[in-house]
Image (cartoon, rainbow, N blue to C red; front, side):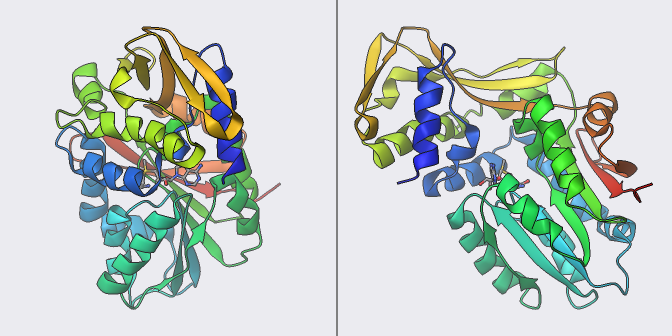
Length: 316
Ligand SMILES: C[S@@+](CC[C@H](N)C(=O)[O-])C[C@H]1O[C@@H](n2cnc3c(N)ncnc32)[C@H](O)[C@@H]1O
């Protein structure tokens, strides 16, 4: 049993404003649902970032400045690796590197490794299961040049103050001239953003409800998912999308593993995820005083998404 997960569920459902952490979305069913979300027509994020990786592959790799230098290509929260594959195809056979995808989901990593063995067999792939924060310290021990990828606006799942701490820790694990490529969704209108979190096929709804099913399965809870509605919102002025599950009845849910019952009032919400959108000012505020300097930015044809390249500065 995952004790940390259970403690987090207990704390989240005991809080005044109930919450669950989105990092727990990704069990086997969650991984598969996320792939469906990425392929849904409303989820513009993946296409937009893929557009950058497909059309600006050579420029990205040139900016990494790794010609004739062995390096480690490290990816945090790699998922299914579709976008990274564009880089790997280009790098394979021409550059000396190892690809190190890191993900909390063992299942996602196994699938990714099989896919890469098929599609880019010459690439040396070493997967690592774990949370971003756990693996940051291990990164420090790598002496070769590090190119770190943090794509898919994964940063946006953190509150700004946590994102700042995370980037600071990441920067501390980097050496001079190491680089970080960070993909972020840009602030845009609600007509575009909100449907991405409320697709017609209902994949995002199922993705959120799947976390309740996961709690049922792993901790003997009795969530009845038909009693919860997926109610996302997006506040354009803030640039933040939030996902909630709203209880549609007064109900009680029991979790056997902690022998505890939780009351949900009709209309009460469980906060599931934030997806922050960015602009230059918000991002530079997060990177302020981290020792990382922005060197380039790559945008898709529609200007929906941006991949910013940062470089670790020499300590003075
Ligand atoms: C939104 S998906 C994005 C995947 C990929 N980066 C992309 O752009 O398509 C997030 C991925 O990060 C992983 N993940 C989420 N929270 C994590 C955490 N705290 N530590 C490590 N991996 C995490 C998930 O398992 C999932 O594969």
